[in-house]
Image 1 (cartoon, rainbow, N blue to C red):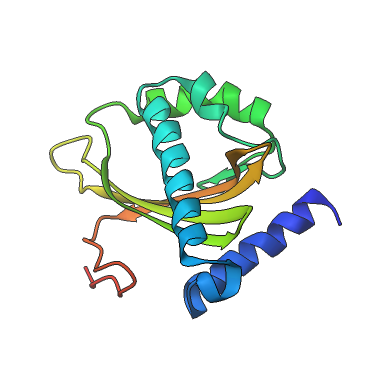
Image 2: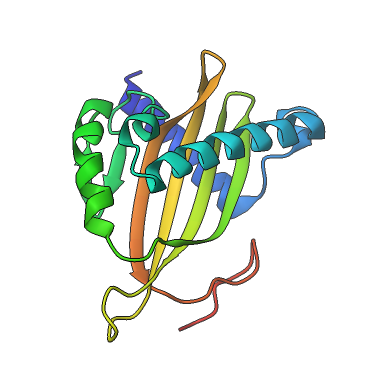
Length: 173
């Protein structure tokens, strides 16, 4: 099975679990294992995002596994970590203005070696008449060599609407 095919299957599994239920202790081990996985992924996610917000692309990109396709943003595919590293500086510079505001991170353990995170951000308007933007970032995490790495990332953005409670519907605009 090719790495791209394996990732498609992993991503599909993650999406099905998020729609149909939770990966929990009955499926993937004890509740302690699930909590430990979520805590470890959260620590890696926060460290990677801290580096990204500080515009430290070398450290941020170091959290990515070198799998294909690695990153999809606004329909643009970053096929490898090397390409992402070259584009990272442009991505953080283009944001300019006030930093984005984290609404929440939600992390689900898929197995003892995989998880996914969904992060929701509010990006302040760039100009006084512009509306704020809602950015949703989904990452598939894999455990490699004892470290949690991002195996795939998808980012999308649209008009800001305050999200509902975790696990609940988003209220209409």
